Image 1 (spheres, one colour):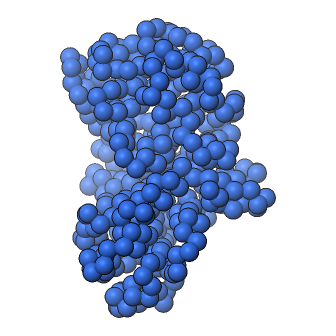
Image 2 (cartoon, rainbow, N blue to C red):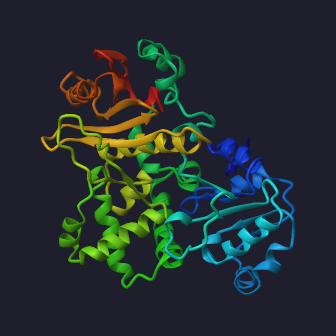
Image 3 (cartoon, one colour):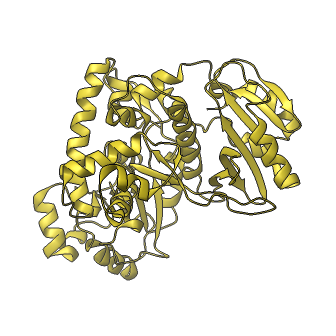
Length: 414
């Protein structure tokens, strides 16, 4: 389905399309949230061309009516899209009441630039009435106009012995991950802006808008300058275990302030906390989450980086996994990382039911068994529960490195 219109009139399908359509056919409320400029409004308006009314709470008059006379606002039409609903979180109480009076599938489509489930201002629950979906920046398949999740589903639907053939049959072809990291996944810089200078202008405007506008919907921040310094510090630490005390010491900020601001970044879809896989067999495990930025291009800009690092390749892989997971209506896998106190670490662990798949990411063109040593440790630690392990690299060969441990180019899977 055509979703995002770009300057050359081409269109980009989104992985979340089917999930939104399916959910709206069953539930009275569908909530689509994600960072601003990811394409939420375009997505829902394109999916629902016959929806009689579209209202955005960015409009001052609409926002005032939502605040003072919410029931009158919702009575305008039997079905409607309410955009940027986080601006008036009290409106959810009126939505709940309207749904309870008459439950109609797809009655309300709500979008927002903040995770309503993490907002302290949201006290009203839509449990049993709403499906919550997240739209992330574009991943590689979407940029290439391919509405599929790459080869991730095949890691569980194919036998491990068939992984090489499955991966070879579905690859999208070689690419330079550094270019993908520089452009990021926001539709405008990813699809419309060809030069680094133009993207820098866009990213600057995005950060300013986020600090001065979106952030204020979530919480009052005493110093936007210090908050931006925190954003920069996080972008220098992507892929690292969260250490709030260390961040506070480096920035001379109280630890409670660091914790609160990290929560704001997470609620506004900038920060991703990747939880640790904490099932302990025989080893002591690190249990703190790792920190990632949801868009590699914006992370590079905030860190004033000129050359992407292996952490940015990890970010691209993680966001591909997250977009695949969140596009599923049911039976979503859990995503983790795994790290022991003695230094063994696996970048990503996919948990699907009782099965595990370990993923290690290396920005090398010639992977070796030494690059996969922690995958071997993980495989041996959890035994038959590990379906298989994958080492993603920057080369062009698909080859077995050991029993149930396969090396493959990153671009052949994403």
